[in-house]
Amino acid sequence: MFAFDYPWLFLLLPLAWLVRSLPPRRVHQVSVRVPFGNRLAGTIGAGTSTSSSTITRLDLLVMSVVWLLVVAALARPVWIEPPITKQEPTRDMLLLVDLSGSMQQEDFKSPQGKSINRLTAAKEVLGDFLEQRQGDRVGLVVFGDAPYLQAPFSTDLELSRQLLDQCEVGMAGPRTALGDAIGLGINLFDKSEAPAKTMIALTDGNDTKSQLPPIEAARVAAQRDIRIHTVAIGDPTTVGEDKLDEQALRDVATETGGKYFFAADRKQLQGIYAELDKLETREVKTISHRPRNDIYYVPVLIALLISVAFKAFASYKRSRSARVTASKPLVLVNPATGKLEVKS
Image 1 (cartoon, rainbow, N blue to C red):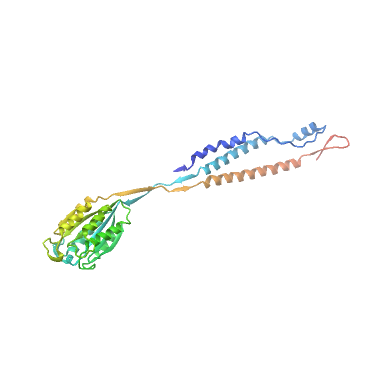
Image 2: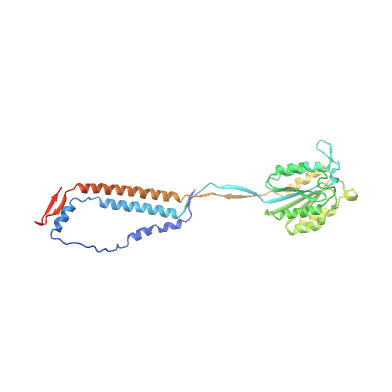
């Protein structure tokens, strides 16, 4: 689409005609009065061209066109390209995955009925969940004795899934540091500009290693508008360090406006992430941009070409007129008789 950035500059168009309508400045020239002036003027005027008025109108036309092009260039013509749309995610989602030693327990079943450990089941379900989060930026933090960033926030969900598949039980230490993992997630969200921020924490044991208690970390997250959903897996009857602290996980979720879930098997775990997918709806913000290309040089170039062409034409006309004038007889005054004489 063609448009002008400053169309109001076309109000300057009448300025050229206003300047031209001003009265010309009178110039007093020195002249010589002779008694045979009438005869001299008649003789010279008889050979003049009658095309002067035509040249004047042509001058006026060319100047008008050039002035119009100059004003058009000042108005800054632009060519607006078709819109380019870009989709930006509106949610950053961080997955916290427990890699403590208790995740090695083989109390889950695969779809084929084979016994698998908790982490393997979690990776299968989380992987499917990741593929459905198109439009979100997803990050991954794993934790054991300490939390570690496995995958930064990215819309490349396939890469996040690959990094999740590379996780192994115990690679972050045998114990559980959920509170510190939430604290790391809060720090990661400090650089996030997404309007919605969500954490999903999956663990099978109570916090035995964190320097920051999970509930305190949850309060900080709530102050920064970060919602935390907690997912507990495994056997709630387990005792000792691997005991599942359901109450702590409920408190963390409640403090931030999230939900607590418990999954005793793979089917329940799959249902939980299906529900989370509905709770955390995917929204994408569409940004549209139309590139603008300046083309002010086009009228400037056309005006320059017209001016050069007209000057060349005028120069040709003058040189031709000079040759015609040189071929005419010369009228001289005989000083002895005072009469006009024509010489070829």
